[in-house]
Image (tube, rainbow, N blue to C red; front, side, top):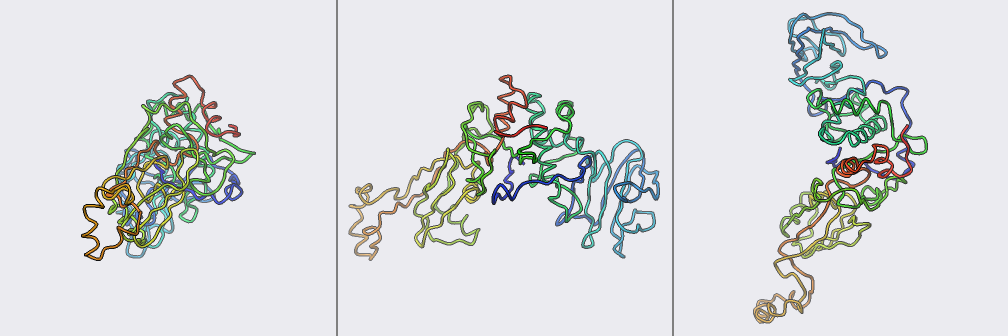
Length: 411
Protein backbone atom coordinates (compact mmCIF):
# COMPACT_ATOMS: atom_id res chain seq x y z
CA UNK A 1 0.00 0.00 0.00
CA UNK A 2 3.03 2.31 0.38
CA UNK A 3 3.53 2.85 -3.32
CA UNK A 4 0.24 3.40 -3.18
CA UNK A 5 0.67 2.53 -3.36
CA UNK A 6 -0.86 5.00 -5.35
CA UNK A 7 -3.52 4.02 -3.88
CA UNK A 8 -5.69 4.40 -3.67
CA UNK A 9 -8.63 6.12 -1.83
CA UNK A 10 -11.18 8.85 -2.49
CA UNK A 11 -11.96 11.02 0.52
CA UNK A 12 -15.20 12.93 0.04
CA UNK A 13 -15.67 13.80 3.70
CA UNK A 14 -14.82 12.22 7.02
CA UNK A 15 -18.39 11.07 7.49
CA UNK A 16 -18.32 9.04 4.28
CA UNK A 17 -15.44 6.85 5.42
CA UNK A 18 -16.62 5.89 8.90
CA UNK A 19 -16.39 2.16 9.30
CA UNK A 20 -18.95 -0.29 10.62
CA UNK A 21 -17.07 -3.30 11.99
CA UNK A 22 -18.01 -6.75 10.67
CA UNK A 23 -19.36 -9.37 13.04
CA UNK A 24 -16.08 -11.30 12.88
CA UNK A 25 -12.79 -10.91 11.08
CA UNK A 26 -10.72 -13.72 12.52
CA UNK A 27 -10.29 -15.30 9.06
CA UNK A 28 -9.71 -13.42 5.84
CA UNK A 29 -10.11 -14.25 2.15
CA UNK A 30 -7.49 -12.98 -0.32
CA UNK A 31 -8.03 -12.86 -4.07
CA UNK A 32 -4.96 -14.41 -5.69
CA UNK A 33 -6.38 -14.53 -9.22
CA UNK A 34 -9.61 -12.83 -10.27
CA UNK A 35 -11.12 -10.60 -12.93
CA UNK A 36 -8.63 -10.28 -15.77
CA UNK A 37 -6.24 -12.73 -14.03
CA UNK A 38 -8.88 -15.42 -13.33
CA UNK A 39 -7.77 -18.93 -14.28
CA UNK A 40 -8.87 -21.71 -16.63
CA UNK A 41 -6.60 -24.12 -14.79
CA UNK A 42 -4.82 -24.12 -11.41
CA UNK A 43 -1.96 -26.28 -10.17
CA UNK A 44 -1.75 -27.19 -6.48
CA UNK A 45 0.89 -29.09 -4.52
CA UNK A 46 1.01 -30.61 -1.03
CA UNK A 47 3.16 -33.50 0.14
CA UNK A 48 0.36 -34.62 2.47
CA UNK A 49 -2.27 -34.80 -0.24
CA UNK A 50 -5.59 -32.93 -0.26
CA UNK A 51 -9.04 -32.88 1.25
CA UNK A 52 -11.66 -31.69 -1.23
CA UNK A 53 -15.02 -30.20 -0.35
CA UNK A 54 -16.98 -26.98 -0.03
CA UNK A 55 -17.75 -24.34 2.53
CA UNK A 56 -21.14 -24.00 4.23
CA UNK A 57 -21.81 -21.32 6.85
CA UNK A 58 -18.07 -20.86 7.24
CA UNK A 59 -17.42 -24.56 7.88
CA UNK A 60 -15.52 -26.95 5.61
CA UNK A 61 -17.58 -29.94 4.39
CA UNK A 62 -15.32 -32.72 3.07
CA UNK A 63 -16.50 -34.74 0.07
CA UNK A 64 -13.31 -36.48 -1.07
CA UNK A 65 -9.63 -37.05 -0.32
CA UNK A 66 -6.81 -37.08 -2.87
CA UNK A 67 -3.65 -39.01 -2.02
CA UNK A 68 -1.40 -37.22 -4.51
CA UNK A 69 1.33 -34.60 -3.99
CA UNK A 70 0.03 -32.48 -6.88
CA UNK A 71 -3.25 -31.92 -8.71
CA UNK A 72 -4.59 -29.82 -11.54
CA UNK A 73 -8.03 -28.23 -11.33
CA UNK A 74 -9.64 -26.91 -14.50
CA UNK A 75 -12.93 -25.62 -15.88
CA UNK A 76 -14.33 -28.40 -18.07
CA UNK A 77 -16.41 -28.09 -21.24
CA UNK A 78 -19.60 -28.07 -19.18
CA UNK A 79 -18.38 -25.09 -17.18
CA UNK A 80 -17.78 -27.10 -14.02
CA UNK A 81 -14.73 -27.43 -11.81
CA UNK A 82 -12.90 -30.70 -12.27
CA UNK A 83 -9.80 -32.24 -10.75
CA UNK A 84 -7.84 -34.07 -13.41
CA UNK A 85 -8.61 -37.79 -13.14
CA UNK A 86 -11.75 -37.26 -11.03
CA UNK A 87 -15.42 -36.49 -11.59
CA UNK A 88 -16.67 -32.95 -12.10
CA UNK A 89 -17.50 -30.96 -8.96
CA UNK A 90 -20.87 -29.34 -8.31
CA UNK A 91 -20.47 -25.63 -7.49
CA UNK A 92 -17.47 -23.98 -5.89
CA UNK A 93 -14.59 -25.98 -4.44
CA UNK A 94 -12.42 -25.75 -1.31
CA UNK A 95 -9.12 -27.63 -1.00
CA UNK A 96 -7.29 -28.24 2.28
CA UNK A 97 -3.80 -29.59 2.80
CA UNK A 98 -3.78 -33.21 3.99
CA UNK A 99 -0.80 -32.21 6.11
CA UNK A 100 1.45 -29.16 6.03
CA UNK A 101 0.90 -26.19 3.71
CA UNK A 102 -0.49 -25.72 0.20
CA UNK A 103 1.33 -24.54 -2.87
CA UNK A 104 -0.88 -22.64 -5.28
CA UNK A 105 0.70 -21.98 -8.66
CA UNK A 106 4.13 -22.57 -7.10
CA UNK A 107 3.76 -20.29 -4.08
CA UNK A 108 3.37 -21.58 -0.52
CA UNK A 109 0.36 -20.44 1.52
CA UNK A 110 -1.16 -21.03 4.91
CA UNK A 111 -4.87 -21.85 5.12
CA UNK A 112 -7.02 -23.27 2.32
CA UNK A 113 -7.61 -22.67 -1.37
CA UNK A 114 -11.10 -21.80 -2.56
CA UNK A 115 -12.05 -21.91 -6.22
CA UNK A 116 -15.11 -19.97 -7.31
CA UNK A 117 -16.63 -19.92 -10.79
CA UNK A 118 -17.29 -16.48 -12.24
CA UNK A 119 -17.94 -15.77 -15.92
CA UNK A 120 -16.61 -19.20 -16.92
CA UNK A 121 -13.27 -18.82 -15.13
CA UNK A 122 -11.89 -19.59 -11.68
CA UNK A 123 -11.46 -16.93 -9.04
CA UNK A 124 -8.66 -18.29 -6.83
CA UNK A 125 -8.92 -17.39 -3.14
CA UNK A 126 -6.63 -18.05 -0.19
CA UNK A 127 -8.56 -18.22 3.10
CA UNK A 128 -6.55 -18.15 6.34
CA UNK A 129 -6.49 -16.65 9.85
CA UNK A 130 -6.18 -12.88 9.68
CA UNK A 131 -3.22 -12.77 12.06
CA UNK A 132 -1.34 -15.26 9.87
CA UNK A 133 -2.14 -13.15 6.82
CA UNK A 134 -0.39 -10.26 8.57
CA UNK A 135 2.79 -12.32 9.02
CA UNK A 136 3.26 -12.08 5.26
CA UNK A 137 1.95 -8.54 4.72
CA UNK A 138 4.46 -7.18 7.20
CA UNK A 139 7.33 -8.78 5.28
CA UNK A 140 6.19 -7.12 2.05
CA UNK A 141 5.28 -3.71 3.42
CA UNK A 142 8.28 -3.13 5.73
CA UNK A 143 11.80 -4.55 5.93
CA UNK A 144 11.95 -7.38 8.53
CA UNK A 145 15.42 -6.10 9.46
CA UNK A 146 13.95 -2.90 10.90
CA UNK A 147 13.41 -2.41 14.68
CA UNK A 148 10.66 -4.47 16.28
CA UNK A 149 8.74 -1.39 17.49
CA UNK A 150 8.50 -0.09 13.91
CA UNK A 151 7.26 -3.51 12.77
CA UNK A 152 4.69 -3.52 15.58
CA UNK A 153 3.42 -0.10 14.49
CA UNK A 154 3.18 -1.42 10.93
CA UNK A 155 1.32 -4.54 12.14
CA UNK A 156 -1.32 -2.41 13.87
CA UNK A 157 -1.69 -0.26 10.74
CA UNK A 158 -1.96 -3.30 8.45
CA UNK A 159 -4.51 -4.99 10.72
CA UNK A 160 -6.55 -1.78 10.92
CA UNK A 161 -6.45 -1.37 7.15
CA UNK A 162 -7.65 -4.95 6.63
CA UNK A 163 -10.55 -4.61 9.06
CA UNK A 164 -11.61 -1.19 7.81
CA UNK A 165 -11.58 -2.35 4.18
CA UNK A 166 -13.05 -5.78 4.90
CA UNK A 167 -15.70 -5.67 2.17
CA UNK A 168 -13.63 -3.97 -0.52
CA UNK A 169 -13.88 -6.97 -2.88
CA UNK A 170 -17.17 -8.44 -1.65
CA UNK A 171 -18.52 -8.61 -5.20
CA UNK A 172 -15.74 -11.11 -6.04
CA UNK A 173 -16.36 -13.22 -2.95
CA UNK A 174 -13.27 -12.23 -0.96
CA UNK A 175 -12.06 -9.42 1.30
CA UNK A 176 -8.84 -7.98 -0.14
CA UNK A 177 -6.50 -8.57 -3.06
CA UNK A 178 -2.76 -9.19 -2.73
CA UNK A 179 -1.32 -6.10 -4.45
CA UNK A 180 -0.85 -2.42 -3.59
CA UNK A 181 -4.53 -1.90 -4.42
CA UNK A 182 -5.03 -3.40 -0.94
CA UNK A 183 -1.89 -4.54 0.91
CA UNK A 184 0.90 -6.58 -0.63
CA UNK A 185 0.69 -10.25 0.39
CA UNK A 186 3.13 -12.92 -0.75
CA UNK A 187 2.26 -15.99 1.32
CA UNK A 188 4.75 -17.86 3.49
CA UNK A 189 7.77 -16.69 1.44
CA UNK A 190 7.57 -13.16 2.88
CA UNK A 191 7.21 -14.18 6.54
CA UNK A 192 10.08 -14.01 9.03
CA UNK A 193 10.62 -14.53 12.75
CA UNK A 194 10.42 -10.78 13.35
CA UNK A 195 7.24 -10.23 11.35
CA UNK A 196 5.59 -13.10 13.23
CA UNK A 197 6.78 -11.68 16.56
CA UNK A 198 5.52 -8.18 15.72
CA UNK A 199 2.08 -9.50 14.76
CA UNK A 200 1.84 -11.79 17.78
CA UNK A 201 2.83 -9.02 20.21
CA UNK A 202 0.05 -6.77 18.85
CA UNK A 203 -2.56 -9.50 18.34
CA UNK A 204 -6.00 -8.06 17.67
CA UNK A 205 -4.94 -4.45 18.26
CA UNK A 206 -6.57 -1.81 16.06
CA UNK A 207 -6.06 1.91 15.59
CA UNK A 208 -9.30 3.74 16.40
CA UNK A 209 -10.72 7.26 16.31
CA UNK A 210 -13.92 8.06 18.19
CA UNK A 211 -14.67 4.36 18.49
CA UNK A 212 -14.28 3.65 14.78
CA UNK A 213 -11.41 1.79 13.13
CA UNK A 214 -9.14 4.49 11.70
CA UNK A 215 -7.87 4.76 8.14
CA UNK A 216 -4.29 3.86 9.03
CA UNK A 217 -2.62 5.00 5.83
CA UNK A 218 1.14 4.69 5.41
CA UNK A 219 3.84 5.32 2.82
CA UNK A 220 7.63 5.16 2.44
CA UNK A 221 8.85 8.66 3.38
CA UNK A 222 7.63 12.26 3.65
CA UNK A 223 10.72 14.44 3.27
CA UNK A 224 10.19 16.06 6.67
CA UNK A 225 6.48 17.00 6.39
CA UNK A 226 3.31 14.94 6.29
CA UNK A 227 0.44 15.87 3.96
CA UNK A 228 -3.15 16.75 4.77
CA UNK A 229 -5.60 14.23 3.29
CA UNK A 230 -7.71 17.05 1.83
CA UNK A 231 -4.82 18.14 -0.40
CA UNK A 232 -4.27 14.61 -1.67
CA UNK A 233 -7.76 13.11 -2.05
CA UNK A 234 -9.98 16.12 -1.45
CA UNK A 235 -11.60 15.33 1.91
CA UNK A 236 -10.59 16.29 5.44
CA UNK A 237 -9.89 13.64 8.10
CA UNK A 238 -9.16 14.86 11.68
CA UNK A 239 -6.20 12.55 12.28
CA UNK A 240 -4.70 12.76 8.77
CA UNK A 241 -3.45 16.33 8.81
CA UNK A 242 -0.24 18.10 7.82
CA UNK A 243 2.59 18.50 10.30
CA UNK A 244 6.37 18.72 10.44
CA UNK A 245 8.10 15.39 10.97
CA UNK A 246 11.30 15.96 12.95
CA UNK A 247 11.99 12.23 13.27
CA UNK A 248 12.43 11.00 9.70
CA UNK A 249 16.13 11.12 8.84
CA UNK A 250 16.18 12.43 5.29
CA UNK A 251 19.59 11.00 4.40
CA UNK A 252 18.45 7.48 5.27
CA UNK A 253 14.91 7.66 3.89
CA UNK A 254 13.67 6.00 0.70
CA UNK A 255 13.83 8.80 -1.87
CA UNK A 256 14.37 11.35 0.90
CA UNK A 257 15.34 13.61 -2.00
CA UNK A 258 14.78 13.04 -5.70
CA UNK A 259 14.92 14.79 -9.05
CA UNK A 260 12.87 14.24 -12.19
CA UNK A 261 13.27 16.12 -15.48
CA UNK A 262 10.57 16.21 -18.17
CA UNK A 263 10.79 17.96 -21.50
CA UNK A 264 7.91 20.07 -22.78
CA UNK A 265 7.25 17.27 -25.26
CA UNK A 266 7.16 14.70 -22.44
CA UNK A 267 4.49 16.69 -20.61
CA UNK A 268 2.45 17.24 -23.76
CA UNK A 269 2.50 13.48 -24.37
CA UNK A 270 1.46 12.73 -20.78
CA UNK A 271 -1.55 14.99 -21.29
CA UNK A 272 -2.36 13.40 -24.65
CA UNK A 273 -2.32 10.02 -22.88
CA UNK A 274 -5.23 11.43 -20.85
CA UNK A 275 -6.95 12.81 -23.96
CA UNK A 276 -5.96 16.39 -23.12
CA UNK A 277 -4.47 18.53 -25.88
CA UNK A 278 -3.37 22.10 -25.14
CA UNK A 279 -0.68 22.20 -27.79
CA UNK A 280 2.98 22.94 -27.21
CA UNK A 281 3.78 23.35 -23.52
CA UNK A 282 4.93 26.87 -22.69
CA UNK A 283 5.15 26.74 -18.91
CA UNK A 284 4.38 24.69 -15.80
CA UNK A 285 3.89 26.50 -12.51
CA UNK A 286 2.78 25.73 -8.96
CA UNK A 287 -0.43 27.60 -8.09
CA UNK A 288 -1.35 25.92 -4.80
CA UNK A 289 0.64 24.40 -1.94
CA UNK A 290 0.18 23.63 1.76
CA UNK A 291 2.87 22.57 4.23
CA UNK A 292 5.18 21.61 1.35
CA UNK A 293 2.42 19.66 -0.40
CA UNK A 294 1.76 20.90 -3.94
CA UNK A 295 -1.97 20.50 -4.56
CA UNK A 296 -2.40 22.58 -7.72
CA UNK A 297 -0.26 23.00 -10.83
CA UNK A 298 -1.05 24.98 -13.98
CA UNK A 299 0.19 23.63 -17.30
CA UNK A 300 0.15 26.40 -19.88
CA UNK A 301 0.06 25.48 -23.55
CA UNK A 302 -0.25 27.33 -26.83
CA UNK A 303 -3.93 26.33 -27.06
CA UNK A 304 -5.01 26.70 -23.46
CA UNK A 305 -4.30 25.96 -19.83
CA UNK A 306 -4.87 22.73 -17.91
CA UNK A 307 -4.98 22.66 -14.12
CA UNK A 308 -3.91 19.55 -12.19
CA UNK A 309 -5.10 19.12 -8.60
CA UNK A 310 -4.37 17.00 -5.52
CA UNK A 311 -2.99 13.47 -6.07
CA UNK A 312 -3.22 13.96 -9.85
CA UNK A 313 -0.26 16.31 -9.50
CA UNK A 314 1.85 13.28 -8.70
CA UNK A 315 0.07 11.01 -11.17
CA UNK A 316 0.14 13.24 -14.26
CA UNK A 317 3.87 13.95 -14.04
CA UNK A 318 4.84 10.53 -12.65
CA UNK A 319 6.50 11.96 -9.52
CA UNK A 320 7.52 10.31 -6.25
CA UNK A 321 5.44 12.69 -4.13
CA UNK A 322 3.63 16.04 -4.04
CA UNK A 323 6.55 17.70 -2.24
CA UNK A 324 8.61 19.50 -4.91
CA UNK A 325 9.72 22.70 -6.63
CA UNK A 326 9.86 23.30 -10.40
CA UNK A 327 12.70 24.84 -12.39
CA UNK A 328 12.34 25.59 -16.11
CA UNK A 329 15.48 25.28 -18.24
CA UNK A 330 16.44 25.57 -21.88
CA UNK A 331 14.28 26.97 -24.66
CA UNK A 332 13.03 30.52 -24.18
CA UNK A 333 12.85 30.29 -20.40
CA UNK A 334 11.77 33.88 -19.70
CA UNK A 335 10.04 36.98 -21.07
CA UNK A 336 11.25 39.13 -23.96
CA UNK A 337 12.97 41.48 -21.56
CA UNK A 338 14.76 38.58 -19.85
CA UNK A 339 15.94 37.25 -23.20
CA UNK A 340 16.83 40.50 -24.92
CA UNK A 341 20.10 39.19 -26.32
CA UNK A 342 18.22 36.42 -28.13
CA UNK A 343 15.36 38.68 -29.19
CA UNK A 344 17.43 41.46 -30.73
CA UNK A 345 19.39 39.01 -32.90
CA UNK A 346 16.29 37.44 -34.44
CA UNK A 347 13.65 40.16 -34.28
CA UNK A 348 13.88 41.11 -37.97
CA UNK A 349 13.65 37.48 -39.07
CA UNK A 350 10.58 36.97 -36.88
CA UNK A 351 9.00 40.08 -38.43
CA UNK A 352 9.58 39.33 -42.13
CA UNK A 353 8.45 35.70 -41.64
CA UNK A 354 5.16 36.84 -40.11
CA UNK A 355 5.82 35.31 -36.68
CA UNK A 356 4.55 38.03 -34.34
CA UNK A 357 4.19 35.85 -31.24
CA UNK A 358 7.57 36.85 -29.92
CA UNK A 359 6.47 40.51 -29.88
CA UNK A 360 3.15 39.96 -28.08
CA UNK A 361 3.70 37.10 -25.67
CA UNK A 362 5.76 37.10 -22.51
CA UNK A 363 5.01 33.47 -21.75
CA UNK A 364 8.16 31.45 -21.20
CA UNK A 365 8.73 28.48 -23.43
CA UNK A 366 10.97 26.06 -21.61
CA UNK A 367 12.79 23.17 -23.14
CA UNK A 368 12.46 21.10 -19.95
CA UNK A 369 11.16 21.22 -16.40
CA UNK A 370 13.05 19.83 -13.43
CA UNK A 371 11.13 18.72 -10.36
CA UNK A 372 13.28 18.71 -7.22
CA UNK A 373 11.40 16.88 -4.51
CA UNK A 374 11.34 15.01 -1.23
CA UNK A 375 9.56 11.91 0.01
CA UNK A 376 8.03 8.86 -1.61
CA UNK A 377 4.29 8.20 -1.62
CA UNK A 378 1.14 10.12 -0.72
CA UNK A 379 2.66 11.32 2.61
CA UNK A 380 -0.66 10.96 4.46
CA UNK A 381 -0.42 9.17 7.81
CA UNK A 382 2.62 7.18 8.91
CA UNK A 383 6.03 7.44 7.28
CA UNK A 384 7.56 3.98 7.35
CA UNK A 385 11.07 5.42 7.32
CA UNK A 386 10.00 7.80 10.06
CA UNK A 387 8.65 4.89 12.12
CA UNK A 388 11.98 3.12 11.71
CA UNK A 389 13.90 6.21 12.80
CA UNK A 390 11.60 6.82 15.78
CA UNK A 391 12.07 3.19 16.88
CA UNK A 392 15.84 3.61 16.62
CA UNK A 393 15.50 6.66 18.87
CA UNK A 394 13.73 4.55 21.49
CA UNK A 395 10.07 5.33 20.80
CA UNK A 396 7.51 2.54 21.24
CA UNK A 397 5.08 1.44 18.53
CA UNK A 398 2.30 3.27 20.37
CA UNK A 399 4.25 6.53 20.54
CA UNK A 400 4.94 6.23 16.82
CA UNK A 401 1.24 5.80 16.05
CA UNK A 402 0.30 8.64 18.39
CA UNK A 403 2.63 10.98 16.48
CA UNK A 404 1.46 10.09 12.98
CA UNK A 405 -2.25 9.72 13.80
CA UNK A 406 -2.96 12.39 16.46
CA UNK A 407 -6.13 11.81 18.45
CA UNK A 408 -6.30 8.07 17.78
CA UNK A 409 -5.98 5.25 20.30
CA UNK A 410 -4.91 1.61 20.03
CA UNK A 411 -7.47 -0.86 21.37
